[in-house]
Amino acid sequence: MRGLGETLADLARALRETPLEAHGERRLKEIARLLHRLPPGQERDGLLAVAYLRLYQITGREAFFLRGYSYARTARLMPVRLMAEKLGESL
Image (tube, rainbow, N blue to C red; front, side):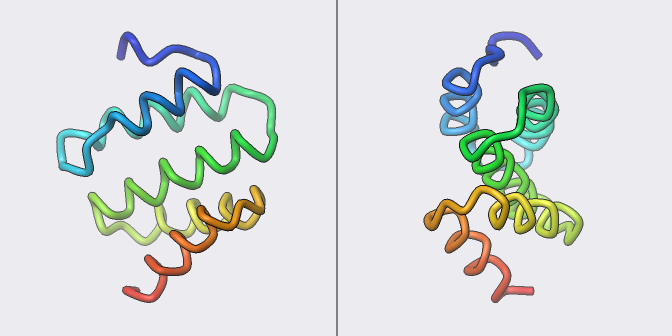
């Protein structure tokens, strides 16, 4: 996938611009793959959490929720943690 960029800022923008629709699944997976290539840190882990939680919203696959929730806890960013907890209520 081209045009996503490779910096945290580029990937954060790409994540914001990706719709929560079935055709966004492939793009979200690519964003997560690129984020995994960056060094661990609060912002990267927060973005990974959002990417996986959005993948869960699109697909309903529990594995995506678990990964997203794990990264949300690691990132220690309250908005991301609240998103994960709210989605967890629907399980």
